[in-house]
Structures are given as C-alpha cells and as structure tokens.
Length: 180
Length: 68
Image (cartoon, rainbow over all chains, first blue to last red; front, side, top):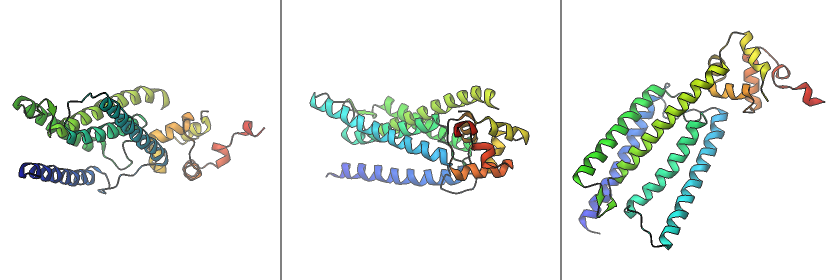
C-alpha cells in the first residue's frame, strides 16, 4: 500500500467517524428530550421493521444486478471503493422512504423543524462539494466516480429524503381534512 | 373496518387525534390508523386509550356483530 492510498483510507475513515459523532450531536440537539435515542410507538416500530426488510431486499437486488452486469462485462462508471457506498445508499434510501411514507420516520421525541434545518444544511454542504469537484474534475477519476462520490451519494440521499417528506406532508394535509 | 366508536368517544371528550395521541404516548398517525381500521393496536395501547377516554375495552374494541 502506497502513502497516497494509506492517506486516502485514513481520511475517509476519519471523515466517517467524525460524521457519526456529528450525527450523534445533531440527534441530541434535535430531540425534544435531549436524548440520543429516538422513541417510536408500536405501529411505527412495526413499519420500521418492514422498512429495514425492504432496505435489505433492495441491497440484495442491487448486488444481483451488479453480478449480472459483471457477467456481461459491463462496468458501471463507479470506483470499486465507491461501489460499497452505492449499496449503503440503495439500502438506506429504500428504508427511509418506506418509513416516511408509512409515518414511521419521525419519532415521538423528534423536533421536525430542527431536523429539517440540519438536513437542509447537510444537503447544501454536499451539493456544494459535488458542484465544486465536478467543476475541478475531481468528482470523476478516469471517467469513474471517485472518492467525492460519497458527497454525491449523501447529496442525492438528502434530496430524496426532502422530496419524500414534502410528498408525505402534502398527502397528510389532504388526508387530515377528511379525518379530523 | 373503521372504529367509529373510538372516534365518537374521542369527539365526546372534545379531544383531537393529536391530544389523544400525546396522552397515550403514540403518534397522531397511529390514532388515525386505529380509527380508520388500518392498524390493530396491542392490548397495552387499547387499555391506554380506554383509560384516557374513560371507556372499557368492550365499549371501544369489542364488535358484538362479529360475536354472532
């Protein structure tokens, strides 16, 4: 392993660890009771279980698709290191959108507004990095999605979450008029 | 099947779905799903709802038509 690869590996690992720490801090700040753990009721827990299941199935489906493409010698324009993030993205995106559409995303102790502000900030930050690296030519290395693909996946995920939340809010608004 | 007895018991106490949900420590959507018949609550939640609405389990969750 050369010094460049070692540095890159250390950088990504450190970035992920800092990311986890930031997520934990955001969770404490954004929860009404200032606790790290989000509370869900019994219906939400069942829906979240289904969300995890569909997330897992979608990861398997993506693995099978990649396997078929590999047999056909078709290469996706993504670096192998970024391919792992594509699996995470597919799984998390499926789980999160399922939970949002089944009212199981927001916990009982979540402050939605604070979370949405954080999401907006994270999405904007990642979109900024994607645009900057796209302009400088660092996003794609030899025609393949490089290390900054992490930011591309994050940006895509948060934009997707934003769209799903907006759709669900509209659906709830129209359904609320009938129920209350 | 819609649970209209729950809805009317809640309305009789002038409670919104959100207020009942907060008292029972569940989300508003869960109360809505129970009223619409989209979700079958556990016995623990049924008891919590009954206590808040001052009703018995029979009053809110027993269907005499199904008994026959």
